[in-house]
Each structure stands twice: as structure tokens, then as C-alpha cells.
Image (cartoon, rainbow, N blue to C red; front, top):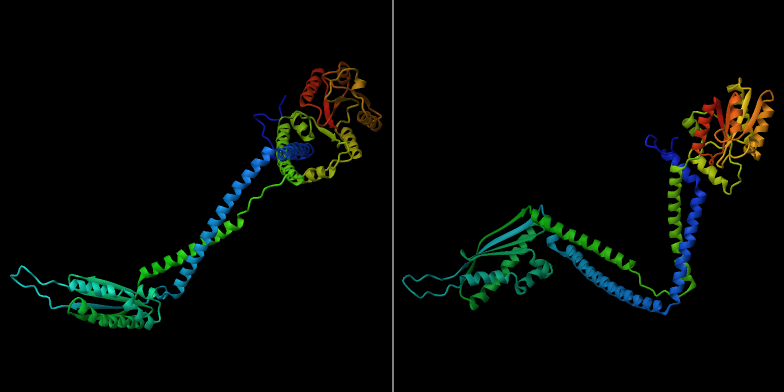
Amino acid sequence: MKNKVSAGQEVDIKELLYGVMKAWRPVLGLGLGCAVLLGGYKASQSLAGQMDAEYASEQQEQYEADLLMYESARESYEREIENMVNSLDSQQEYLQNSVLMQISPYEKGTAAADLYVKTDYQIMPGMDYQNQDYTDALVKAYGTSLKEDGVLEAVAEQMGLELRYLKELISVTPDLESDVLTVTVAHTDEAAAGRLLDLLLEGLEEKEEELSESVGAHDLVVLSQTTDSVVDLSLSDSQKRVADSLTTLQDSLEEKEKALSQLSKPSLSPGSRGAVLSVGVKYGVLGGVMGVLLGAFCACLFWLFRDKAEDGGELELRFGFPELGTFGSRKKRWFSCVDRLVDRMFGKKPAADDETVYRRIEARIRYYYPEAKQLYLGQLSRSGNAGGSAEKFAGEFAKEFAGRLKEAFPERTLQWGGALAEDPEALGYAASSDGVILVVEKGRTAYQEIQREAEAAKSCGARILGFVLS
């Protein structure tokens, strides 16, 4: 006897899915049962908890803790958003007003001047005591003055710039060994850079008199002064970093605003029927889904390990008996339209009506086996086969089927009864007949019974002409 699933037989996934879908009634019933059980259990727990004073106290404590966390998170988000907005405004203002950010890195206007601080200091040869050399102090003082507001305010006013945007255009490099101060400025074009440098030099000339009185006599000599237009890729990198920083800040602001909008204030659920119903519905849905999944799993197992005749084509493959006809189910089932829909989804042909099946059986017997004049009809069922042959073929369908064959073949001798493997009288009828037709109950007759029937027929020398699936 072959099992439904064996090492040498593959499982047809499509047929497995079809079998599970056809079992939608018990699967759905199990889902509804689990939904009612789990939903009712959780709802009763919720109702009992609302009536418990200790539970209400725990709920109040939990609510207060959640509210404190909510307020803390909300204040933190609001503070961070405010800081980000201020920083974003500052960066946008800087990008809009800063001259350095508007300079093209591929046509950067520059101007530079080398300033020499000349004093009358001389080293006295042969003298242990030397006069103090204040040249370095003067070089540092000039470099510092170009960073002080006093000198730069007048220049900023004449250039129409804010002081902070002017300072980032100026670069001062002192060389204390040679007493030279190099001043370099940048602007959007060469002419503007030259004008800015001229204004700075004018400011240093005014500073010269002040430093001569406070530090010592000296002369500030302009050794060289140049203007140029250069390519500065480092400026391009700097501008890109500022733009990227602004974009990152905007993204962070959007994330914080989204997080703040999604922050929900906790609420203390009052003891009410609505709350109990909400808990029941939530867990009812969960239980329903779990029940449906469990039912589908059980349906898979049932299909894999079932040992009942369901399909005529499978019977032909297993035992080599020709299928003479298959009758549809005579049970009136609710929502049969769903069954028909499942059949169409998997390409199954709709079951023929009984009259069509009868004509098909009669034609096949007539033309396949014209020489068989004596026929034995043996019915197999899921129940034991005790008693005489006439009792084995009892039932409305069996009587109707035998009557139709006798009416169709009046010239042939028909005998009906039970299974050959169980009924001694059936063996005698089968041995004396020209052929045996097995009547198999769909979904009830085990393959093992059919195997025993085939062995019994072979033992008594009977020939099985085919089977009818009822």
C-alpha cells in the first residue's frame, strides 16, 4: 500500500493549496472560535481589572510616569527645535550676506602688500648693554590693529560691509625675523580687492603716528603691492562645507519637528464598557488571525497524511483502474459559491450533473466492455462490512445506481453487494462474473481498503473493470 506522501513521491504544492482552500469552512470556524475565546478572555480580564482598586492605583501611577516622560521629551524637542531654527537663520543670513561665500573660487579677486617696519635701532659693538629693540613689538602691533574694531570699523563702513564679514576677507602674516608684515585681502573681483587693501593701508598710516608715540619712532614702508585674480579650490571646499552644514541642519530640524508631531500625550483610560469592548475586539482580531493560521496548518497536515480517496485521476495512477465516472457531492452546503470560486481559481472543472455522469458510465461500460455479460457491483465504505451482500449495497444512491444499470443493460446480469475483501458471498459473485465495478465513497473509502479489494479480486480470478467515485 502506498502512502499519500512517500520518499519517492513529490508533493504538488498547487494541490496542497487547493486542499487547504477547500477546507475554508473548518479553518474559518476555528478562527472564529479562537477570536471569541481570546477576545472574551481578555475582555473579562479587563473588566475584572477595572473593578480592582489596586489595579486602578497602578494605572494612575503608570499614567503619571508616562506623563512625566512625555513632558520631558516635549520640552527637549521644543528646545532643540528652537536652537536649530536660530542656527538655521544665522547660517542662511551668513550665506546671503557674506562676501566670502559669494566669491567665485575660480575667479577670486586678491590683493596683497608687504609692509616693512623701519626703526633706527642699531647694535652697539663692544657694549654689554644694548638699546631695546622694539621692532618686533611694532610688527605685532600692526598685525593686531588689522584685527581690531577701531581700524576696521571705518573700512567696513566705506566698503558697505558688516564688521564680521570684513574680518574673514583679511589675512595678516607677520615675519618677525625680517620685520615684514604681509597683508592679503580677498573680494569678489580684483578691483574690489585692491580698493579694500588701499583702505586698510590708509588705516595703518593713521595708526603709524599713534604707535610712534606709544612704542617708538619708526617708518612703515610699503615694499610691494599687487592685485590678482586666482583660482582657490580650498575656498570651494569651504563654501561646500557651509552649504552641506545648512542642508544637514534643515534635515535634522525636519526630523525633530516630525518626532514632536508624533509625540502623543498619554491618557488615563477611564473604566468603561468602551475600554473593555476595545480590548475584546483587539484580542479577538488577534485570536482570529491565529486561529485561521492554525486551521490552515492543520488543513495542510490533514491533506499530507490523509488516506482517503478524493480524486479519480489519483486512483487511476495508484491502482491502474479506469475511472468510469465521478459524481458530485449531493450535500447542500452553505456558501457553495465560495467552493465554486476556489475551483475556478485552481482550474478545476465544475462537477457534472448526475444524469450526465450516468450516461457517461453507461457508454463506457457498453463500449469498453461489450463482452462482459455478468457484472458485479461492489461498494466500499468507511464502515465495517459485516452482513450479507444485499445489506452492503444498501442506501439511496446504491439502489439508484444499480437500478439505472439494470435499466440500461437489460441483456446483462447484474449482481450487487459489498466489498470482496470482507464479504464471502461477494467473492463468489465476483468469481463467477465477467468483471467487477467498484463503487468508492469519495472522502470516506481508504486507499488501504481499495488495495485489499484489488488483492481479493486477483486471488479469486475476478477482473476489475473500473470504479465509480460517489
